[in-house]
Amino acid sequence: KQEVTQIPAALSVPEGENLVLNCSFTDSAIYNLQWFRQDPGKGLTSLLLIQSSQREQTSGRLNASLDKSSGRSTLYIAASQPGDSATYLCAVGGAAGNKLTFGGGTRVLVKP
Amino acid sequence: DAGITQSPRHKVTETGTPVTLRCHQTENHRYMYWYRQDPGHGLRLIHYSYGVKDTDKGEVSDGYSVSRSKTEDFLLTLESATSSQTSVYFCAISEEQGYRNEQFFGPGTRLTVL
Image 1 (cartoon, rainbow over the protein chains, first blue to last red):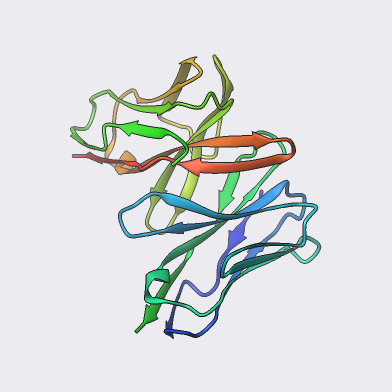
Image 2: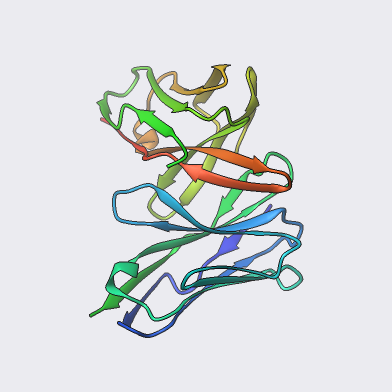
């Protein structure tokens, strides 16, 4: 059974600092990996999708890397802003139906 | 938001009553999913659908049933609600573009079972 872990569960950084969020998974036979953002009381917003054949994906200030062999992905957010404060969720998808298995999330606070 | 709506957005009900949550999409996506989100457990898959009348169980399917009679609608039913089913329920679709499958989520339904 796939297990996804995100450590730390929470972190606080000053504005302008780069954010590094970690995700690890136990079964390397994944189809893809997706990073989401969730604001309090809201739904999930897809940030980046990395397919299993890719090593990284970039969108604006966001960059996500994937190392399938070691079962790890890292989300980098450059030059953090208070608006980046949210919970970030990592999810891995299997080939059959792309069912996602989620990590517990990392709650981020960016202090002005 | 990938054209996903959920109804109702909030519901309070009593133990033992039946409850149906609706997910509606406007873009003819083949795959649809129901997840629940709980503190300490994160998001977990309840059921999913890979086409009209084609559904399968997820990780936490006990006490839930689903139906998909039209491409655009995916219904989640709690036949007899229990307090353990108090949760936030999210519907999702998978947007397929070749080998790329990205999931997008609806706004959620907050269900309270008293």
